[in-house]
Length: 380
Image (cartoon, rainbow, N blue to C red; front, side, top):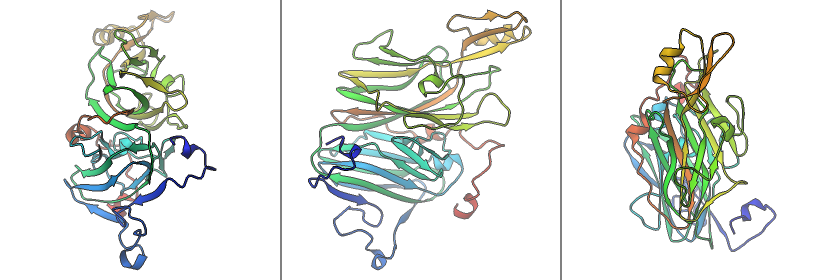
């Protein structure tokens, strides 16, 4: 059943196809678009500041197959203020708790256009997620507006009712602002197997420290008893995202960096957002999984800067190398502001930490060189 959607020629009438919107909040058969005699009367709803609404309550078994959402362009602290929570089988604690934009692959409250195998932000304003979300008993989807402004929200949840294999999507969100020197940032942890690490959406607010590159850190996957060292260890941040020799804005089916906010001609960005989907290269675990990423940078330093720089940013890896011109090159420990949404399937539903809006909204305001979306003045 799980691979049915990959074969568009397959016909399976055991699946009952449904959709929930504000015009058909129950997804009932024959109840779509009934307002105003079917002439598009209620496609959206105004969500007040601080308001929480239930988008969907569905009795299973079934599978959510596509989520589409949009809301008007706004400053980052408004865009990231919408959060998305999912509760399985009547649980009081969520198994998904994440800012809406991060769910769709875009951290820091800054939408940009991109497309991947599982998520897309078409034209930077139509947000789509295609990861299957099976549920056996029931599922409840909630939206909370933790921003300081009311927002007009449009959405559609496409799902099927019918038999499923137990496999519940979990999305946890965490942030360290700032990270701790020499302590790797944790992307995913605390999940009980059996399960599958589907991937992650990671955001970095890069601190300017005089270095030339922030992404030498390795992504490490500890699974089923790994302790000091992992089973899977990458070679650098840009390599994990499928690129090399630095990192700029790009997108691809299973990995990409759609968000790269930097002042013109500066080597370091201010905000970065990347995604990585482990679809053709699955990461399975029987008991537990932990995924981390190091904060390691690289620098070329002239002789008069080396001592001061190295005093607060110790060498990593092979250490510093003196060059014939008297400069020094090396990779070094560093500190930045990291956040991550981890996507993990588990055989049984589990609680994830409830999103803290204050933590999500801190230090993401628009920078002086960023240009507001022209539609903000029309739709805000």
